[in-house]
Length: 311
Image (cartoon, rainbow, N blue to C red; front, side, top):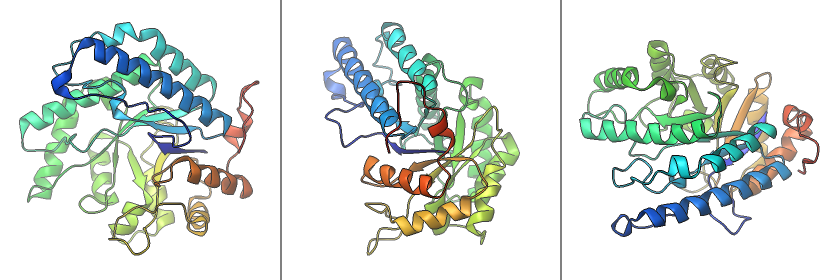
């Protein structure tokens, strides 16, 4: 198992998603921003290796306006060596990375323009993983989208759009159950139609489900992942913030709840992304708990010489 956190490392003094206003676009600004973002991404990955946090969600803004028509800078060529070096580092250290495109990526929108921009964004983010030389276990994670007054029609549109996607995007795409509109069962319908793996979010399942107990739900989602092509199932983990609106993520991990979740998970190989506000702080605690219960084994055993894991 691997444990990880999304996008931002609060222990470091850099960001891997620095950007600027669209109105001030220039090729020079893009070049400088990408150089800074990739340097910070490398620092984050090195920190993660040092602390045995081997799952990381890369922020969508590594390349400012990466899928926007205004960006004509040939960043793929200019930074080919840097992307490849980061990819080599990821593979050498048994890391797993992913992207979670922003909320504007909606494959089942009735607006053709929104759908095309969504596809463009998936192509852009997938191309970064391609430039890194990573296989299909590095995923692009999206939600099913909106209902627009007719869930059946919305699901049909999602399937139709998926079938139009480039194969390189299909190989990376996974769909996540959400907390209001599309349950695990809805996502399983998409899997049954086109084969897309289902990324399981435990907190969303607690908010919206069809009565499936957590251990069963985990195994239903895990069965949609091909062990070689897709790798172990990716799971988003969080819990309810006390005293807040339903669905608001907790600020810091509640250890008893996480231990209980690991009991539900026992017997499954999974990589867990903590969607918790204090980022790597909770990830450190999760690693210690997983080692205590004997689940954090594969990553610890595969640490290359010269990169000792520290938890």
